[in-house]
Image 1: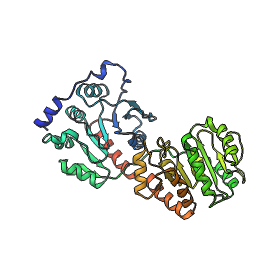
Image 2: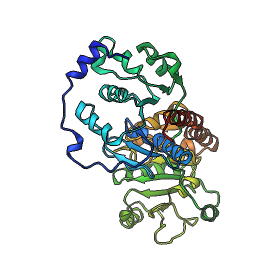
Image 3: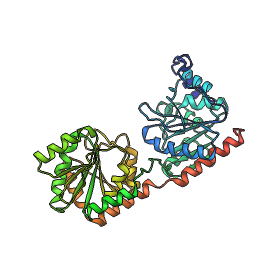
Image 4: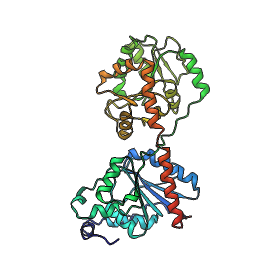
Length: 400
């Protein structure tokens, strides 16, 4: 496909940065076929992780390169790298070094320099979990958007509205599929069944709620909500997982001295007996256990600095979610849960007590938890379809 004059002029006027190759900091490219998956934002990482896992399970000889914004954690079994800036030298050096067999973009991330450079090299391009594309200044360049979206071998849109947005720009209709959201690998957290049964016996059918990875600035809010909810259910137990376990001892002393609450600490091997009102779960690696035991979870940080955990963690384990407005970096996940009626949003600290009290009614908590579970466990078929398309294209092009 010949490049349109408008797009050609746009690309020629892009700034040219020093090549990445000059820095010599890239890991070595492994032999064999390599697929490059680009996460457009932190919210895309769980879906990218699940897709990469499926690809590697199906093709153990396949290498998967994952790029994501700064601050992203690494995905086990993949090669991690910083994505190139969308300027010619950076993109050209990146493609020359990694020589990907397929390039898979995601979200709304239209990267004109990369798309054209990959097309010129004959690399198959895919867009997954595609939202309505953001073209920026390209909207005013005649024919540019149409040519760019026509470079994709397949566009897997997250919904019908996004698919229609691509079609309006000029994407080939037989290459656009409204597939739905991809499955997200939040890593269903383990929780030893024997330990769960032992603690459930100690709880003796008491109502329980969980504050997950609670930062210091929200401790007073959660304790106030707990006291208020205890007026409705005097046997109510709060499992409090502090964001900083090292603060647990001082927190326990303060709750007992200042709040006159009976506290037990997990790290001290103290049991949550009948008289215990707050159980400080100040040990690492046990979030899966607490999600399984608590029908209600408040997501720590969402009333202050941002969510400490991915909301699909408790959702996948049947706990009803309460959260505030500060949902970054998992905003998309919280939005999906809210749209499906799978989470309770509170606007201010004072609303937390009302939400907890309301969800003490088992039927209300169960309805919320079911909606959350349906969202958290959806997307498997969409991910399978994407994986199949990528592997088929890889085989067609000799990437065996």
